[in-house]
Length: 124
Image (cartoon, rainbow, N blue to C red; front, side, top):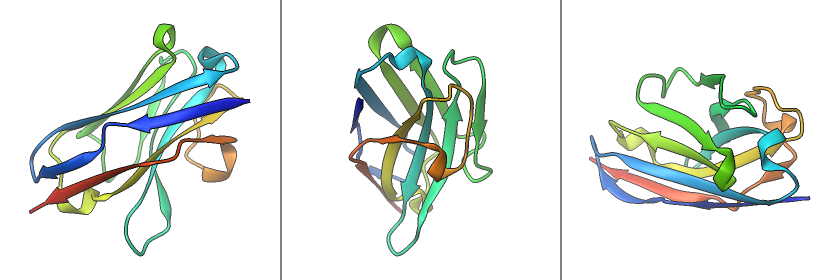
């Protein structure tokens, strides 16, 4: 079993930066593929970014490509989402997720483990 804890959300202004973190406990974190998803008010949860178990491969939603960067530190059992150039439409609850298969996936149902979410609010 894996427990994921999201942190780092907050209220920022458009154009600001924020870094989310997700720490894991339980089984071997370094073998997990990890992802970030978000749910905006009144919308379904959507894919944001994913990173392979080694950190070598990443993949992003078009809406965040070039602004967001996903990374991981397996020594610290942590994955990060650096968000730059934030826009009001980035306002959402952000969730990290983990999957036993160590590769990339943008599919929500590919992930077995989920964090509790952290709120990001971007004001204009």
